[in-house]
Image (cartoon, rainbow, N blue to C red; front, side, top):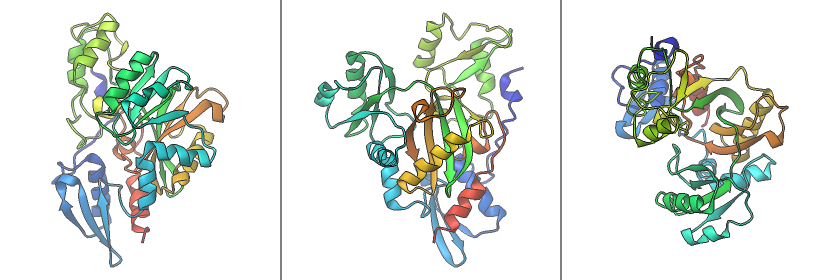
Length: 336
């Protein structure tokens, strides 16, 4: 039996609104449950208008609204500016450099390898390269990153596991660990068959909380490094990772860890949101070792996300539905 059916993942698209992103569907369902009037302004852009207490609230992609100020949104959208505001509040973050052109890569002399390269203002992990051990690798990654942004950040790599903390109105509401695309063997089916089974009830885009695993060149290369192929039959219980990055957009799993996370890191997430003035925020934090005593040396805040994906917290691959849309809608409707 494929592991998809053992997770409790049970997302059902909202009837009549299946073409909206899952986060917007979740907010719409809550709006309907409260019998609040709304209007679809632009379904392709997930743009709706809500009327509440004789006031109109515009909501984009489920969470972008007046709840976050324009300046707070701007700070979080600029990864370099985010660092400045984290520094002001004494919140741990990666040491780095901002490059304005490819030729400036020669300035990378006072950073300790391995390094991370990422565009200044993209999301979903686009053109992000991690754990780069040589200048040649860095130069290649910098060239790629400049294809997506006019400025590129090079920063020191911090090992550990990355978690998404959802902060709403200065309170921590949910935490998800995103695990790279993987399958678990059952002793009879091939990796290709296990992928096909796990892809049931997953989507091709963000209209679903979890996206399908697509056996592309990266997955084939990753399997080859493990002396495996799509036709290999893993042993029962054998877990095989299919790629390195943990983005949900490439078939990763969201796992709810809200109850297990030490309160220290929950407080860090709230402080990080406050540093930029965000009322609704997805905070990405890398923690070196959860078993170690929490300290500033054991974590870094990676990014602040004003457009916070809610579906990973309501419909994790493993874990409970945190019903975060209730708090988000409250924050939006109390913003005027």
